[in-house]
Amino acid sequence: MNRSILTLDEFTIQQLKRFPSATGELSGLLRDIGLAAKRVNVEVNKAGLVDILGDTGRMNVQGEEVKKLDVYANGHFTDVLQRGISCAGVGSEEMDDFIAFDDEISRQSKYVCLIDPLDGSSNIDVNISIGTIFGVYRRVSERGTAATQADFLQQGRSQIAAGYIIYGSSTMLVYATRRGVNGFTLDPSIGEFCLSHPDIKCPAQGTIYSVNHGNFFEFETGVRKYIDQCQQKDQQEGGPYSQRYSGSMVADMHRNLLKGGIFMYPGTAGKPGGKLRLLYECNPFAFILEIAGGAATDGKQSILDIQPTTLHQRTPFFAGSREMMDALGDCMLCAPEDN
Ligand code: P6P
Image 1: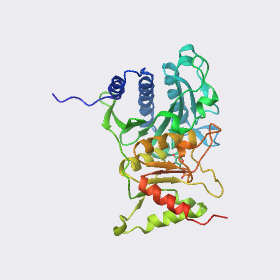
Image 2: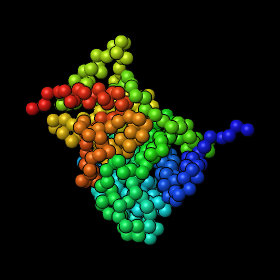
Image 3: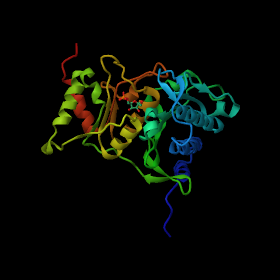
Image 4: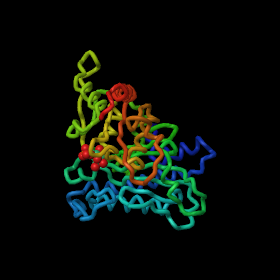
């Protein structure tokens, strides 16, 4: 009898059985995220057919136009997590401040979530893959009380789990715990995420570099030096390299995680802190990359070691194959100080 492939629910319960001390709350939280992802997936897949494209006319705390699908996704993920038994509160790109769920069961919950409900939403209207990014932390405040800001401003290294959903040619949920990174592909015929990419490892070396070249002359010297190196790689040096950049972080990071590569969103003269948000974009991917054997830094230190001070703070972000990250680090170390 060929055993059917594991669903996300079966996989999380299998993990639970391997660790009898576990309470099942993390499994429940991951199943909740999978449920919300299936609902958002339905709307993403029919975007263009219904009036869910376009802008709401509102700007979010980042000063960016809020797409209707952003709001829809944020509502679904927040609702599902509030109705579950595992999450005490949510911080989201789409909400100015975090929400501490005020019902008794939520106040007793062990975890809080940080989420970018629909990243890359400017690509929705042109049908480029977009995604949801999430990070899960054990709360530091006392259970039985409302979640506090300190629960959300923890270093990324404290994450218990982190992951993303990519709404692409297929819909995948990829998540990491300290025990590994696993990918699940949505099987529409049964409406379940099924284990398709067990134990994902990021190749130590790749030939893809991802960066918005339009900002090249605003990057610091060491970054420009590394990009020049990528462009000059020939066959003897394991090249030639390819530049792949979709403008959707989840799509670019997913490809580089599986195939090997480096993704860079550096600071610029105008925006030295970069564009990407630490808590719900960079920390989850940095956690996933480090568990998969890759690396992620802000150009100076591991992303996971940054002590957050505000919910929506930004950081320069470099992440990918370890040997490519080492080569970037060498360029940045030996570059003359920019004036
Ligand atoms: P730029 C999308 O808005 C996003 O936050 C990431 O998904 C993506 O990698 C980046 O911004 C693209 O930014 O400035 O290159 O268009």
